[in-house]
Image 1: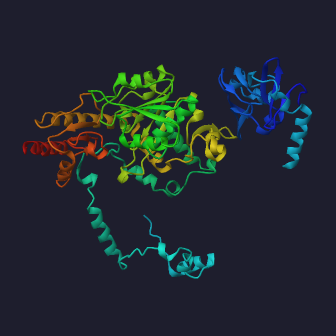
Image 2: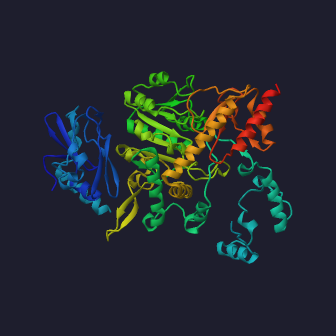
Length: 130
Length: 450
């Protein structure tokens, strides 16, 4: 299940808003599609991103995908545990497998993202299109 | 070389298969205006053909039949008949880069062994399956460092890196938002240390120094890596005469982050300039950005040792436009030749080649520098190649000596890399004392003519 308190992108990232901090990760659907994740390339603290900008890559045994920021902001924390142990993104994509935390530069962008229900429907329609 | 005949019947069968009536019809879509008549002479018998090409081949000076002192990037080392014997096996000779790689365990094992040799010689952790040649290996090393730097734009190169390597870098960089700063050599012939340190700034992603450098001088890689690291850049070691690696300290022990260059000296004949053999090796921390194929050692389902391509997600067939490089193959046959050569010679054999090359070069260097009309412009230590300043323009002098069966060296003027009377002299284990003495007498004679 996709948690209701998160906001979702079409490129399968999520963001959890907590005051001015947004925690970003990839969705359960994304980790399943990728398979066993073996490597994460994440930015350094201090990097500033616009919404929908590439902030890193996730590499599994069969593919590499770019990661895109759902919202704009400055990187304030990177999940070092996930970099050292990328499998936790498979195990707990909405919890311990988070990727980066951004200090948000706008509180309006979140409104453009999908709710859990809309995202679930989006994934279903993508699946059907296959 | 195999003889591949085509009979009229074969030709007719092939034309029928593609549905055309004649060879002319096959090429009918090419407008007559752009066709060229090759004006070939009438057919010759096999005996006549052999005589014709034999006579043409005799016009070339042959390294085996001359006193050969040419280097400047390609070196005349011995390669064993055993290597040829193995290379001509069709399993090796006719196989292309394996696209279903794990089926070709022999090929993968050979590449893995080549990578292992390169790592041992360079003191690095990871080597790729080889590249085409030294110049593009340097470019790949620089581009790799640029990606790792995430946004830096400047490469600092020693001016004593082979001129053709630097030209290749400029060609690649011409349409990228990257610039190159070149640092001159000091009075000893080594890259000026102060100028090098001063050229590196916060925009610099890499500092590259060649050793032995283009003038033969052994450089201090520690100075290059220190200059790079002081500003957060990577230190790149460039090697054009890889035989030196068996004798000199491995770049990995001197803080170098990426070692690259030309491995022709390690078992690949000079081949009239190519094919030769590029190599690239780096630290584990940077392996995700290394270009080209990587072979790893693993276990199969039954626990036996097996080999596989690894970290393929860097490569073009998976990563598309985000790949680390558009290089998605390797110089397979030449890497195999180098692997066979290094396996045959082993650590002691490679060291013996390097020691002999160095000792003979020292002998010749001493004798030439004792001639009244000659001097060595650079006093720095050398391995098996050194720069000589003679009494007159080197290019015509070397041409004259070639007529006497001596290929005396490579004039700097050929590369626009220095005064007309300076030339590089290279010595390997192939040179005999008699050849060296013959060169010295010839040079001495020329010196007295003035």
